[in-house]
Amino acid sequence: MHIINYCSIRKGKIANAERVLFSSDEYQLSSFLKSYYKINKISYPKFYKMDAQCKLAFIASEVLFTDFDREKYKDEEIAMVFANSESTLSTDMDYWESAQTIASPALFVYTLPNIMMGEIAIRNKIKGENLFFIAEDFDSNLLLQQTELLFQNNPTKIVIVGWVNYESEERYLARLFLITKTGDGMLFNKENIEKLNKD
Amino acid sequence: MDELIQELKEKIIAQLNLEDIEPDEIDASQPLFGDGLGLDSIDALELIVLMERDYNIKITDTSEGRNIFSTITTMAEYITANSNRNI
Image 1 (cartoon, each protein chain N blue to C red):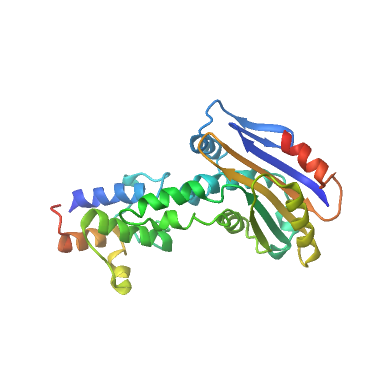
Image 2: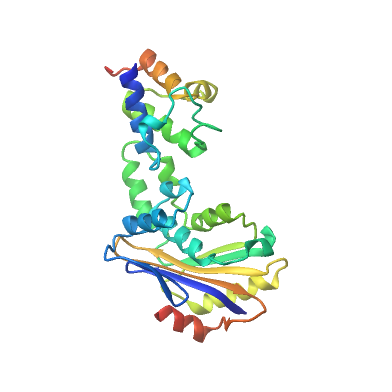
């Protein structure tokens, strides 16, 4: 398995591979991502309706797909495996608060963490398998094993692997990898994942 | 009625996070769903919540909802005819 692209969003910084695309002293995630969205003239009004964690995953996927030849793959050939440690705790709490009066349907839809993959799938017309795991910490073995499993199933040809975790407006991390089964590029193995996870 | 229409435009923008849209850009007679503002099924539920929370109007009949939420004008007309609140 090979890494054809990777990106990260953390501490007010958006990076694609080793290149920093956007950085700000403003660590507050919502305003930081909104600035990136506007500066890059992304046109997807649904972005504003997403909760913070989905916005984080969405912008990371936009970065990951920079220069990606989406047309090369059928909708069913792109799969996803994501994980995090917080599930949707922040939005769960917002939803619980709204439910004290009239529960908000718009918040409710973001109380399942796999909605992140749903948003990315809708945006990019992805219809492949998708898996979401909740783990205590970033677990490279888990992501590796699940990616391998996805490649064993036809028709998967490419997998988006991600750790997207939102704790608060100051503490957040998105790390996405675009993986192919064969080809060129850095090997998708434990050593490289952990090395990139430190960047 | 004009005041209520303006209020609804502002509330809908806030409630549905339509951040790129200004109240003046919304035509009160344009469809809220489909080709108009392009709202979806979750937005429809949020509009039901808005009606109940802000105007004390409960909408339980979905076929009735289709007509009420056709445009901002139809919403305003329904509120004027049914609200328990002084507007």
